[in-house]
Length: 138
Image 1 (cartoon, rainbow, N blue to C red):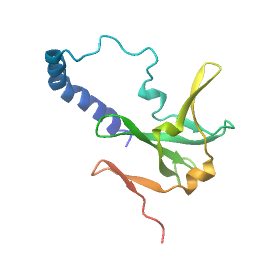
Image 2: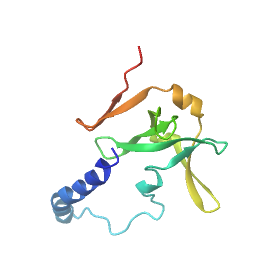
Image 3: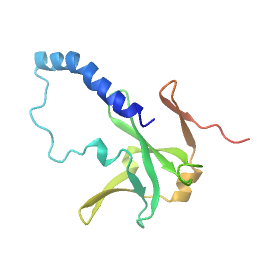
Image 4: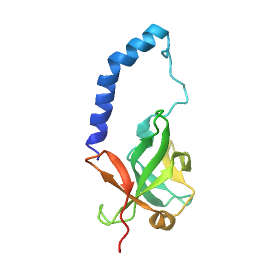
């Protein structure tokens, strides 16, 4: 999955550079500045997630956009040891809060590791490029 994200970003930049740039130029819909309080996706992607007691409860595996390009959900990996036995769960993007301590930014969720471990799991289907509900053990 990690290999696909940079490739997808590059493809979107290259593929979208000609068409949307011309459309924006023709219609005058382009930005001459960016918001001063804007956050980059790197503040979220592949970052650790902590609970309110500053205990690590997971890490961001993926950031999902809706059809309009807005961030709608985040896949958080939880549990496991060295990646084995980990579970990926979906949480609303709004559940993540960016906190700062001693000049360092980090992600916080108002939940517990146990609650995340009990949440429905998802698996990434590489052939379709989508997250699907994980099959429940029988």
